[in-house]
Image (cartoon, rainbow, N blue to C red; front, top):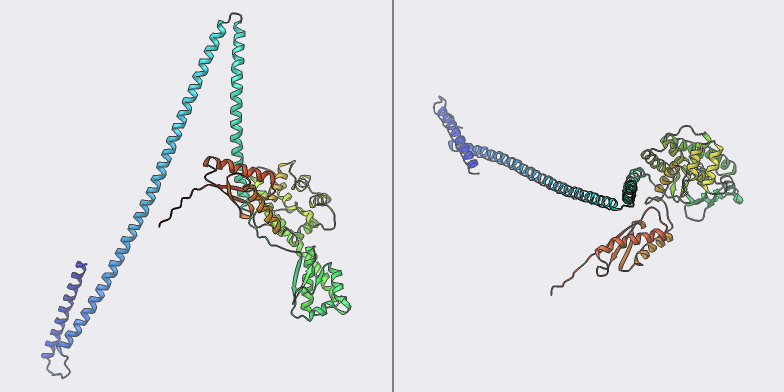
Length: 510
């Protein structure tokens, strides 16, 4: 700062000298002029102006110097921050390297111990072999061949036991590895289950611009509403809500046709039997075209192009069909995407799985036939001459036993789509009952203080008394609670059991 002030002082003095020299030069010029001037400026005024200019120059120089200093300080601060960050990164890398070295050292020790153990066992086997050989040689009643056979039989017995232990160990390792791979496949497959779910009910609402329209919709002696209900197959409720008409039907396609037709009649204003019949017929054709396009779009999204048009028309009805609040087009697309990923990972027939997922719920949109949607779907697909392998996937997607891996994949994909959170509507009473049952199952064990079912019943948090349950028993308790839930209850997906043991000490300052 002193250096900066010195520079500014020197700049100011130099500027003042220059100004004074200019003033004196001007003054001499004035004195030597041949014509006297009455308006000659006073020397003091000129000096004051010069000093003011010098001050302004000095202030400007100070401002620039301060700015340069701030920029230099910013650069120094950034360099310090960068240096600190680099030091942190180096510390982290050093810690990781030390951890790796420790792990490597531990593994080396483990390998060394294993090697020593093997060498020890090998020496024991050799010692035992020599002892057996010596004993057999002393037995005079046995020949050399008989002694050899007896020794080999003894060794074979030991080898069989050792082989059994090795096989069990390998089976356990394979099971763990298989579980790990299965989890990875399912996690990757569930990444594709990101479609939106729209909850739908058995009714639809149509808004009225004027309450007087209700009388026109009813018509003389009820002929308009009677004609409309006969043509569409729905029930109209005009008294449920003011300013609205409720369209009620369990057939979602009929309900959509009725809703659109009623909206068009209200907009048109000509509400009479002939006009109603015309509007309903036109709307029905348009809805059928919309459904065919929806079915064709779904097939194109999945890369399925060889289905009959009649079957594509049936698939298009998925657009207006909901199961437990889950739209069938979204559900089918989700199931197919999951199934394709799993089939690819397991080297199964992707085409069979893809078409099986596309058609697995085809029976749900057949409303005029009795029976389960699985049996109805199988019958429909047989009429269209669909491949037997695909029909098998459709017929077994709700079974516990599967004849092919493709059937198992279709069933698994359907289960994932239906069981994931926020997918389907659920009865609140049944939901609360299931949550209470999970908590009661945990509370039935000794040492449990509290239990809470969270995450829609997919997790149970159990708090135990630290005086009655020790750390070693918490893992066993969690396993036993999980077994009890698995054996006694029905639930979608999986239920994670978390046992929490903690010790709290309280003191009061008085």
